[in-house]
Length: 346
Ligand code: SAH
Image 1: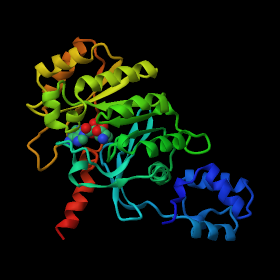
Image 2 (image 1 turned 90 degrees about the vertical axis):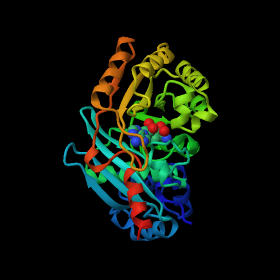
Image 3 (image 1 turned 60 degrees about the vertical axis):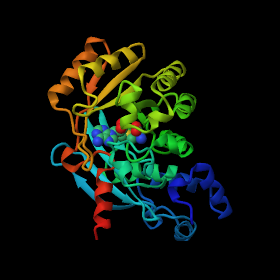
Image 4 (image 1 turned 135 degrees about the horizontal axis):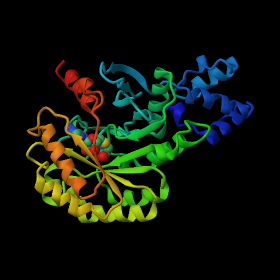
C-alpha cells in the first residue's frame, strides 16, 4: 500500500523530492497545501504538472474521505464521519468555545478497552490510525470550516495510549510551526488509564494536558464500569498521576461521567474528594450520554449539581462539561456505531 500523504514529514518529503530531482523548496509548498487541508495534488496550483503526477503515483492522496457531516442546530458543533482507505470509519468533532475552535480527534478505528458505557467499544476494533490520519482529521476540518483550529483534544474513538508511537508523532506534527502550529498547551490527550504510557507521556509531551477517565472513586465500582481497572488498580493509577504531576508542570484533568444511581451519590463524591485532594487536578463532570443497549442512564441535573457541590466544598476545582452537539449525538463513537448497525441490518 502506498504511504498516506499526510504521513510524510518535512524530512521524508525532502528526501523523496531529491530522488525525484526536484528542488527542496517544493517540500514547503506541498506541506502548506496539506496543512490547509488540500491533499489532492491536482489542486496544488503552484506545482509543475510532472510533480503533481509523481505525487499521485507515489502516495495515497485520498486517505480520509468525508462520508457524512452533521451540524448541530444549537451550537455550531459539527460531527464528521470519515472513511479510511481500507473502509474503516472514524469520527471527528468540530466545536466552538469562547476561547476558540477545537477538533476532537479519533486515534483508532474502534476500541478494545471495553468500557461498559462507551459506544466506541461496542462497534468492535478495526485498527490503529497513523499519525497522518490523525493530522488529516484536523486539517480537513479546518479546510471545511475555513478557519484556524486553535485546540485539539484526543477524545474521539479509541484509546490513544494503545497507539502511543503514532500519537506522539501526531502531536509533534500538529505542534510544528511548519505544520498545524497548534501550541502543546492547547492539546489534551485522554486515557482510560494505561499506567506505563502515562509515566512516559510526561517525558514525551510535557506541555500537553493529560485527562484521565476515572468515572469511579474505588476499584470495586471502577471495575464494574471499566475492564482496564482490573489491570491497573486505582492506587497505581493515582500513583502514576502523582509521578506525571512531578514531571510536568501541568494540571491533570479527571473525567467523571455520572450515571444515575451507579457512581453519582454523595458517598462517591466524598470518596473521590478524599482520594484526589492532594493532586494538582481539575475534575470534569460529564453528564453521561445515554448509550442504548446498556442499563446505564444519565444522572439527573440535580444530582450532577450536588456532586459538584461536594467536590467544591473540598476545594477541588470542578466543572460540568458543557454539552455540545447533543442533538447530533456528537459523543464519541455514537454515530459510527449507528452506521455500522445500519450496515449490519442491510
Ligand atoms: N479512551 C480514552 C479516550 C476516549 S475519550 C479515554 O477513555 O479517556 C472519551 C471520553 O468520553 C472518555 O472519558 C470516556 O470515558 C467518555 N465516555 C464514553 N462514553 C460515554 C458516555 N456514554 N457518557 C459520558 N461519557 C462517556
